[in-house]
Length: 136
Image 1 (cartoon, rainbow, N blue to C red):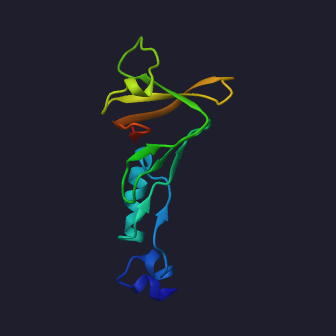
Image 2: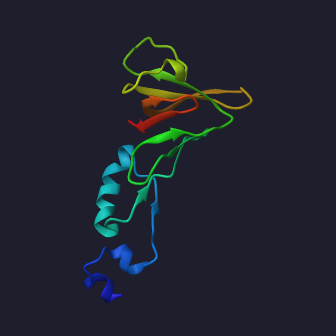
Image 3: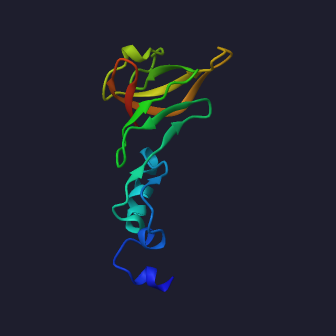
């Protein structure tokens, strides 16, 4: 164990030589913790994994070492509430604008409830079958 602390390599690489990737959510408000973790993990790729709310799995990371996510196909219906407009109504994904933060609204697959979450997403790009987004 002492050898691990005396090594020039990142601590995680010495302790787990076969370690290839770290999967742990670290975007948005957790970005600083991920940056601090790098002192122990060095250049080992970091993947943010899945992004979920209490109601749905909303997205997954598109690549290692990236804060960009893509929406995940689910049985839930998603709407977006613009933050900059005090009297705003929800809009569909096709009406979102890149670079604008939105509050995520989720309706379950049975349509039994519609929940305005406390999750803020910033749409980066709308594609045919998904949205690319970052956490605000």
